[in-house]
Image 1 (cartoon, rainbow, N blue to C red):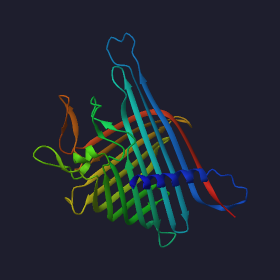
Image 2 (image 1 turned 45 degrees about the vertical axis):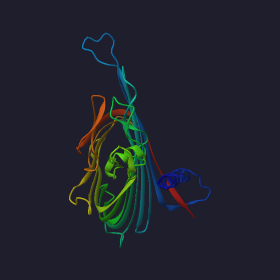
Image 3 (image 1 turned 120 degrees about the horizontal axis):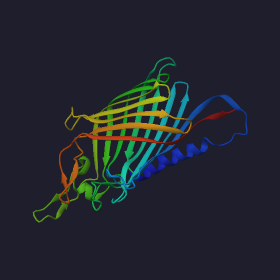
Image 4 (image 1 turned 180 degrees about the vertical axis):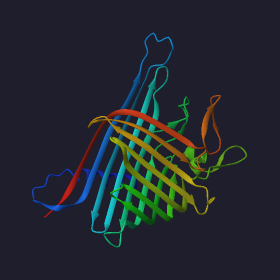
Length: 322
């Protein structure tokens, strides 16, 4: 069911991408309802050694990334849509191919304001987040610790949003947000991964009741997005999401915080430095010890990525025909 929903959403996104490229034969109006922004990039880093006395392993890494936006605006109504994907791999001498980054995210916000001056909107927000491929606690590649739709997160809520288009600043507050966590891998669901109810076993180790593949919560969500040029050709982007469930340990806050600096070398070559911090008390950490996976309590997750590569960015307005 959820896979069908995501397929429909993705199909609508692709339809809009294709629709925005149609050549009009009629004379256009002077106004535009749709604005399209597209960014695709590929970062690569490589190091090799020949008779290097200090030692070292040859390695090569690649990261494919994309960001597609489709924003609709008419009078006091806005509909903003965003598709983000990232996938990175690393190959080091003497090791198998390993994943370094993996993200698929869809954001959609519908907002309405009482007049054309106010920067405050009534808003409804939808967010979906999952990954493309299995994740492992390396060097163990026999047993995955995550998978596509394991987990997957859905947020759907209503609230108020402050949007300053000139300053590229958004602040969203929803006192009523429904969160669904999916773990569609039955083995991971049986383990109670990512906060779902784990399987129940009898005294002989046989499963009496399978682990639940989903978990629902109702809570408060606060998000902030801000983008600015801090110096010539250096862009700074901040995204943070804070969520707390009303019914389960209210006051425990799930944090997802991303910071990125993007430095422009020329029109097509850019360097980037980014960090992401995640904390969720429903996510138990796993590590490899003595050829066994050991599960411990929740911890702060931190990721840092630095790369330089080719970025192709283009914008297009879909003109309303007369």
